[in-house]
Image (cartoon, rainbow, N blue to C red; front, side, top):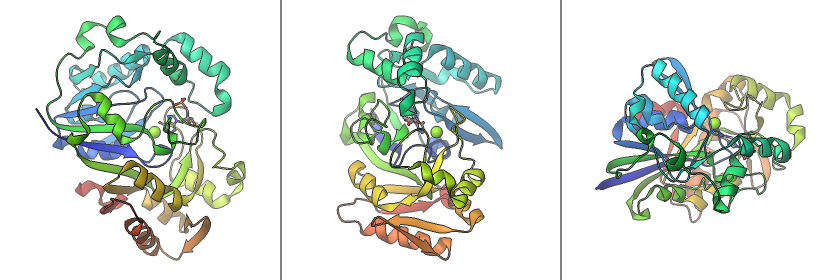
Length: 330
Ligand code: IMP
Ligand code: MG
């Protein structure tokens, strides 16, 4: 029996630090599951001071929890095995990792197509869109057809479940800035594709960042942002380089109008704002609100403006905001 499901997901364009949050919370759950995406994602997690990067394996692996890669995910077998080897070397128990039989397999052809035809969208070149396309055309290959039986999951979810999103609301195939999106459902309702009813969901934990970043192309992030020296210093202090591609991420000030929208759209009940400390290093505090830049004299002042704006937003279910410094208490 499933006791309850909590969902962690991104409210912006990815790279909000979801991995850090799910790693901090995993100890409270029986299962940690991924419902979307594949090797396009990059979760950076610190365990006992050591840095680990995962792409497909849920962060629950670091807490010794059962990990499920759901039917809505896509898998690159070689990359997956490489990741499992890395985890074994670091003495994590990879027998905890199971893959849903219906997850789809990324082929060399998918990757070649992505590189050849989709680079103008700034994709991660991992073959994601072509793999999902073949899935929809009902000619894709599923995990059950190609993976060794020991990896294939044939059980039932039970107990306390944590679902960790990959990518984020503005990269969602239905709600993002199409075509500058990814090819899966990043919205938290997508978690139900793991095989439980939406009524099982208890907490909807949205993760945002104290500033916005975009990896890859998006007209909402104009090229002129590259010329802003303050935003460039955020790239440096915030280490804003793609964990899958190594590309520099384009930085902009936090767009509160978009954040209000993504909170309402996704039904977020709790919000975590990461990387406030980076703005303190830079010493400049700004947000975009009602389409205009607004500057604050301190982080404290900026936090209270963000808090008031989000909590007061009409039609929002949000009732709690946690700032990055307090994440350890979760
Ligand atoms: P794709 O998922 O490789 O097709 O890439 C489509 C778009 O989503 C590109 O703009 C990517 O930069 C972006 N994207 C995909 N995965 C991530 C992620 O994990 N973090 C941030 N951006 C991502
Ligand atoms: Mg990432």
